[in-house]
Image 1 (cartoon, protein in one colour):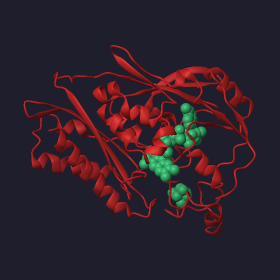
Image 2 (cartoon, helix red, strand yellow; image 1 turned 90 degrees about the vertical axis):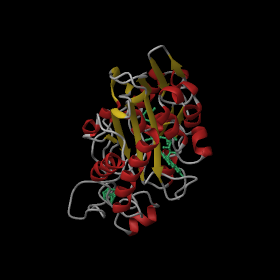
Image 3 (cartoon, rainbow, N blue to C red; image 1 turned 90 degrees about the horizontal axis):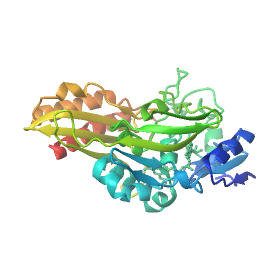
Length: 328
Ligand SMILES: Cc1cc2nc3c(=O)[nH]c(=O)nc-3n(C[C@H](O)[C@H](O)[C@H](O)COP(=O)(O)OP(=O)(O)OC[C@H]3O[C@@H](n4cnc5c(N)ncnc54)[C@H](O)[C@@H]3O)c2cc1C
Ligand code: SF4
């Protein structure tokens, strides 16, 4: 680990001040819990000259509920999110995913905004400066080749945040503030399939809040249940090798709605395709195995962890099968 470099620290109490302080120091970074950013700085991967700390902004610290939606401030901690009764009631997978991030002490200060804006990860990148230097660095930072796919020019570092797939199930929207004011967009549009540049945020933009509309019933009026599960090396504290979120409604023993989202297996979290094919099906063994296989083919994990890609693909399918079976 490197020493912490000299940096200026700002502690604004409003979104507008945070954006303007960031604008005055374009090489700066927003800092929330710091559980990812500070590690990257100590590894020499990130070298900001200033930090704009966002956890003192009241607007970003609250979870608010109205009759039809829940708004989660970007600086709400993972402990607060996982323990919130309204979130657990309407978006069980979101509360579960937040409770599965890292270990209890990280969840105490790690935030949902930091989790959604987490950098992508790779076993050739998340290493100390001397390790990366000894391996001639890599495309994502300072190097000229990708050690995962040496012939190509694409980075496959995996997005490994737990909460994003769960929020994708519910068509969550993110509220963004930046030098040009505020805007809202679907959470899915926050990400692109590029391990080197996976966020679509424009320079200086801050994730202020997440808005999720309550969706208590599907088209068929059947209640929607949801759940999240992940595979990880250390059960007590670790990033997902593969993370799976499932939302499903069942009426009369048949699927009336099915959504599955994945994390940890590509540079972006995403909703799996082709889930409507299962509408009208009974949750028998054949159906569950087909769900497993469809997820497995879409989980295109690369060699970005010490665990082999084929295991991560298989476990993604198995988790989807297990979660779907638990909801039936
Ligand atoms: C040992 C260990 C295990 C971990 N395990 C997991 C795990 O299992 N699952 C998982 O998902 N994560 C894991 N993490 C990563 C991290 O703890 C969490 O993802 C956490 O939610 C990050 O939030 P933070 O507030 O600490 O983010 P920070 O570190 O403060 O920020 C992360 C990034 O987001 C940016 N950012 C922060 N807030 C905003 C905002 N509001 N708007 C725009 N940009 C913003 C920062 O500039 C930075 O680039 C682990 C970390 C460690 C050290
Ligand atoms: S996928 Fe390749 S370019 Fe990206 S971080 Fe890993 S080694 Fe580097």
